[in-house]
Figure (cartoon, rainbow, N blue to C red):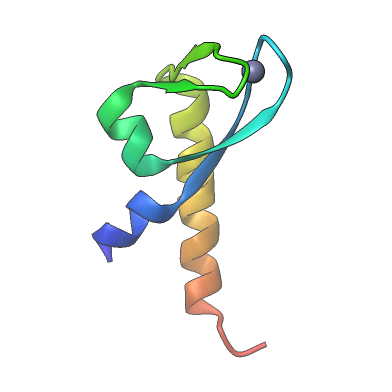
Length: 69
Ligand SMILES: [Zn+2]
């Protein structure tokens, strides 16, 4: 279901304070940047978060497919 992708969060580390942020795919798509609690604005670059996101999507898909542990 394509709508589910918006709920997947990518873990992005703030380059300023080192805090790990959970950024929903919806935010990545719409904003291209995210604000940290330390007020740093983190640009969501194409390679890192989206590559990571694809991995998370694959993970979630495989989990959804194998639901009978
Ligand atoms: Zn920060």
